[in-house]
Length: 242
Ligand code: ADP
Ligand code: MG
Image (cartoon, rainbow, N blue to C red):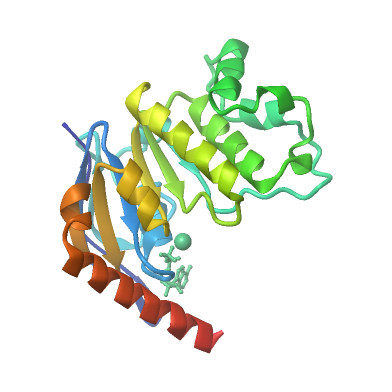
């Protein structure tokens, strides 16, 4: 079953076409890795999918319904932002932050469950700002999970996290996908991790230059090489400009 269908999505900012005629769909229980260099349009794609950016042409359907027509789907979508970093003195505990994601009919028991799911239960009474970036990121997964999403969207979630936290994080994503059957949409720079975890891959660089089964992408040396070269060039370009 298709849970998301994106057709001819085009987004123009003043002077920049961030997405150009992008079409693909996501099946229930997919673990989709979206790879693309900085500026490829990944965050733009997510902001359209989340209904935050409505200045697009083309269409986005969730569960068969056009998101321009209904916002109901948002109740089934969890989102983990790119940089959930709090200042040291932010006056909320881990538990309080997670509780913010609770629905009206949700209960406190669910808060404990998700805290355990992401291995953060022992830290639940700490202030959020006392945690490392990796731990904070897990708190944000918990906050998304406590609303019992069917789909979880993560925007380059391991930027600036140490290797051990990254491994733990990947393990959690796998569990959520395999055991709790949550569809995962995950933007990442980490090709090796995408290769290991995702069953589908989308290669984005304003246009979509590949979408399909992960093995098909990673076993095609030419495609991987083409992707690596173009993203490396972009990286150098950004370096020179900044
Ligand atoms: P990614 O997440 O893949 O790094 P983005 O979606 O953030 O890519 O950006 C895609 C392009 O759109 C970039 O050229 C970026 O500078 C531009 N862009 C992103 N957001 C805005 C905005 N709000 N206004 C103008 N340009 C933007
Ligand atoms: Mg981004």
